[in-house]
Image (cartoon, rainbow, N blue to C red; front, side, top):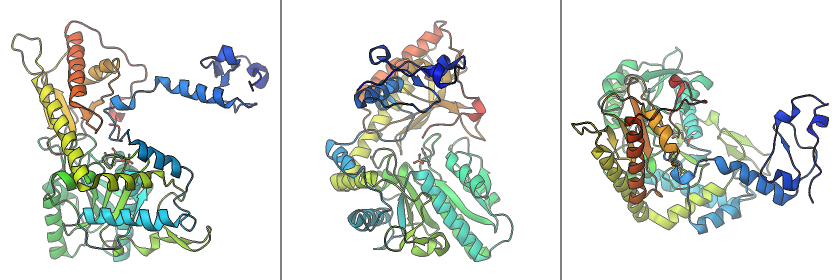
Length: 476
Ligand SMILES: Cc1ncc(COP(=O)(O)O)c(C=O)c1O
């Protein structure tokens, strides 16, 4: 059935300008359709046309494979896709209706991650979440409650974390009324340092955040030093201050590539860890994990018991309903790859990243000295994230370069570093599993062509929708 033509003038009470509020879609003449940008459609549409229309509307989106701005994984095996589709209609909160998914799969995954992070239980407290942001907020809420229950300090609660933390840390501070005490990053290491952390701590500190792979540059905070500091503070002053580890990216890499690096529950002060399943856990978007060291690290007040769905069940996530598909997809990956597979995949990703960093470093300018074009700030040594800045002042900025290579489909963000290094503009490339050494070579060629374009007098394009620089934030 083909829908009747909607007369938008009629719809909008004959208002002039209604034409402007509508858009013609592809094949609109063939199917006789016009869609309003504001009004709910009056009539039905044939499913084939609805599909075609939406499909076409998305055709100007970037290609996820060339999206090197995002940490989020974009490809799974057909068997995983099949499981995803088999689970697309199940709600994870319906634990009595879907006991296998909850009691067997979800519970098992929480325990497997707890053990991967060197906890010792057989019954970890933790949960899947929509992503790392929700996991971080839940972890920090738990620490806020523990601080409140402890009676330590009677000022406004604060938390200490780097200026390079993901925006979800600031969101938590604002949404849940906690003072953010931000530690400026060290210009050399691009992470926070323990001396600056110490200056910000007092009896009202609910928690210190340590990041295993910052969003800005992929830097790793000096967590062992910070742990030692907090152990000492506990001994000297009796303040029991926990660390929440934001291992959004690192949590599915470091256990495999650096098994002896202590960043997890091997450190005394680490009480909670988040990791994104949808980043290097290799599922599609929509999955994070929060794991507590011990059951006592999640205050009982935060757990609600409800019986809407048949029997009493405990819930402590921010959202009630959630799909099961990504949890099952995570289970698939873990069974499918095991530690060996994850190690092989992550080492390969690191090798590709390091090769790419080397090629970028080797790029030479067209000047008589043939000087390097870029200084590499992170060369994918520990996490497959490459950050680089221009060697010298050029007649174009990295944001122009980013814009130029977008013409070839590459999505590579450029932005300024956070406080203490905010005068530095960088470009960041997140290397994911589907990015090959061959693609790295093509990318470097396109970056070089774009640099040559500007060197030869090519003009930077004025960006109509440019974000004010102070608001620019790297994608996750
Ligand atoms: C270090 C870090 N923490 C938290 C997040 C937020 O993760 P999500 O997008 O899963 O909510 C990101 C996203 O990139 C991140 O890099």
